[in-house]
Length: 496
Figure 1: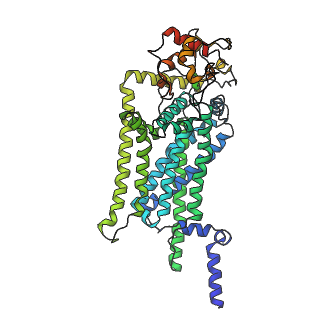
Figure 2: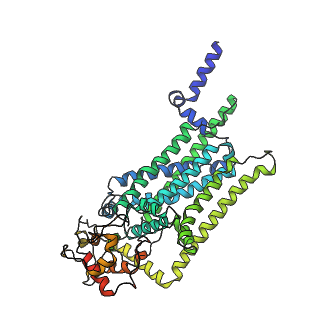
Figure 3: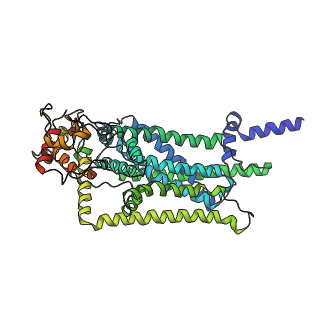
């Protein structure tokens, strides 16, 4: 009895105080897989890189959230303040922006090494958790792209809303839920902010907690004291490898963020009408793919293709071979590797096609060059806070925007009767005095919104789709004369 007690006491001391006073020992035993060496051991550091990048995203996002205000009037100003005034603000935002692009790549590498080692079969919970994390990380990147509320974010959000609206049967409801109304506005921004900061991060943390503390898997438990000693030494060596690789990744990301700041251009209402939106690098392939399909089919492709790829990978643990040594036991792994290889080929090819198409078309190339120049000029200019309310545009408009032909009169007589063309063609949807009806938006104060100057309103009547409006608004290009359209626009900008 005494010998057994001494052995237990020695074993408890040998495990260390973390195992004796916390549950980390049980957590480690649940996460620990069979030890490996050489390149296999280094490849398994992808888990540490994923954990590090997730932590970095949460930390930098929290720092940026201290200054961010999710409204159309203040979002861009608060982001510009963080970029231009806060010490290290531009670097922190660049870490957050580029980290959101590095994280999906790290997760894909993590899935690849798990697939190669057939971890999906031994540890299916970890495999499914990694796939869910990849889906949530991609969705969080899509919602975060709208938050700066510059021209790039505004138009990209309009494109995303149009894709959601193109879905059959549920398109109108999906678009209305995303935008919070008939057009992209503060409600849209606040919903994307809630998804980006609250809902998706909460789901990510829930998956991590469930993976570590709730959904248990049988770990590689040592059977003898010698095995335990070998496993402990390997664990210390693997922690050292993780620390080294994470340090290299952080150094590379820090230098990259210092060299290439996150994009930020002029406010959304300062961009020209012909602005060409381009998504982030992780979504450029999908943007190019959608060009090959009509509107409704493109919306289905945008939602179903990524989902089908992830579902196919998630199904691998459920394939069972009759003989573990048979060739059929290797088929799931080859199937998964083929999916990842085809996906990478598709992403790389379509991204290259998108870049090439932008450089081959002279009009697109010139327009993108002008947009890049505008972003550079805005970034180089000193910070200038915008006023809230109706006078916000006065502090940021360029001389071209205040031209007499493009000015939006603010002091018009709001009680003036609507022109006959409005009464005959617009009142049935927007109300006799622009008050709005049913699901159709009110037009009072429309001239205070981004890209709603007098000329913009005329252009909307000619082609509503060019401004991302819903398909139910018809075009009046051939239904009204230029004089009638301008009369309607002049009356609309007087509404308060």
